[in-house]
Image (cartoon, rainbow, N blue to C red; front, side, top):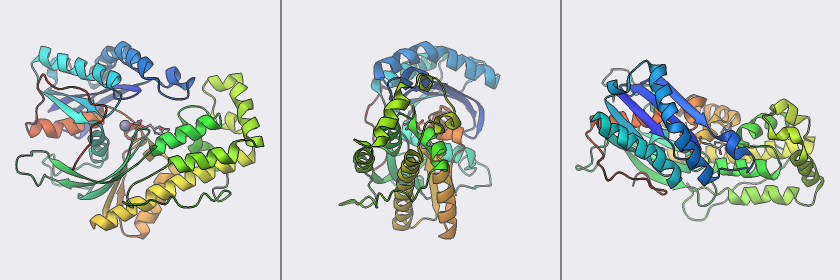
Length: 377
Ligand code: KG4
Ligand code: ZN
């Protein structure tokens, strides 16, 4: 079964063709980073306009790369939320019109469910696809960590409710009460004039800093210990910069004309003092430690031995290394998608959509976009 996936929830216009929920025949992502970089964050109106320009070429390119005609597709899966409504609507309306014109079934997919399926897509959850081998074991404590989300779920096979045909079920264990982890990376990078998006650049620069140089302490949560909060950490970084030589250094980088273009981490490093490198390394370390500790606590609470991690921040090299190291030491199995499938893409939407199509969870003409769209119970 060939599924066309469409994703446009934020600043990536993406389309993909996935066969049988497991084989990615194509995954095309048109990034809008150059458009938003000068503003240090996504500008919703610009994002919608760019999605409009790119949606058709991106879908065509996905078909071409997969060497399939659009009429060969067996179903269309579109991200319906959460995200920027103006952005979501572009992909959603395009997918809806395509399904109608081709007389193919249409399914709406929760963007977060897509991120979770990105783990299964590559780690071959073959039992669901009707094959004998299954590597990524469910149930799993699952961390979805990106620029828009930081949430923990218990993901299990099947759904307890008889009327629900979902192939997987999702129980929310915790979520951020303020900034998402990726948002904190982006805001700290903006404060220090390190470019946009902040995650990848901090990931690189942190290699040259001392992660123990600044002790940010642990993030304390009242109430649910599986919730997150990163705004305090971001403010702690601000206090360490404001009115210090680090702020002057950041202004010099901001005025550096080359910074508007894609500079390498090596070039940028030449414009960063050791104190700045130490600060970003310590910040990254604090975020990763918090994500790791709460995810392990979630796995412990839910009494599962599999951990899934997905979303843009799951590209982070320290995060991947620490999760593997600590999970192994504590007897957990940890699974990530490859970096290209961690960040927003449409293969994850097609994969999630495949199981919904198989379960007959079809959308009708009422399908629409949702800015807020909680996953699970
Ligand atoms: O999943 P994604 O593409 O979009 C959302 O659903 O939000 O994630 C983008 C986020 C950005 O905040 C970006 O800074 C962060 O993921 N990110 C990283 C890394 N690569 C991307 N954060 C930390 N380390 C990275 N290597
Ligand atoms: Zn995402």
